[in-house]
Amino acid sequence: AGTLSLINGIFAERIDTSSTEIQHLITELLLPSGPGIHITCAVIHLHTVPEFIEPSPEKIYQKFHLLLSHYHADCVFVAKKLQYLVYFIFTTGPVSSTLSNAMKEFLCEQFQNYDDHFIALGESFTGISHAYQAYTSAVILLESSFFFPVNSYLTPEMITARSEEHTS
Image 1 (tube, rainbow, N blue to C red):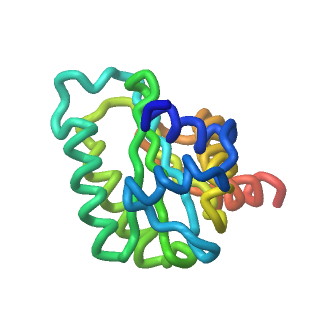
Image 2 (tube, rainbow, N blue to C red):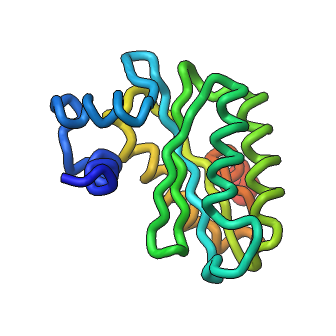
Image 3 (tube, helix red, strand yellow):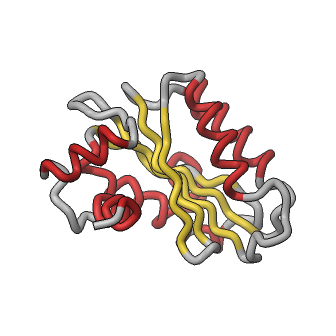
């Protein structure tokens, strides 16, 4: 199987992450692994195809990778139909508020030239075997984007705060 299909399989919960093949892929891609690794997913939904917009998704990924390395974190990037840019972020512990703020600032700045988009940073989970749950939590946030202005940065805390506003 190709590297991309294996990555997609891991993150779509179709492949057992304890398999030798997956462990080899994790090692080959130099991804952090082990019992204390946390995985968080950011999904950017673009309503316009990023063909002629700068910076390109690939350039953003390279810069994001560099930013994360300063926090001893890493990421994998997958583009789905050029409208969904998916970043799986690996950290050695829970995402700190400092890292969370740095990611928000970076992603908002990088995607400011993209009209009509949403950025969702899902919940953090422990272990690469929970990659699918991390992805799902970001996708659920995107489903709530209807209630927010375009170009919003969505987090679980925002959704909780908004629902508390409407129940009080």
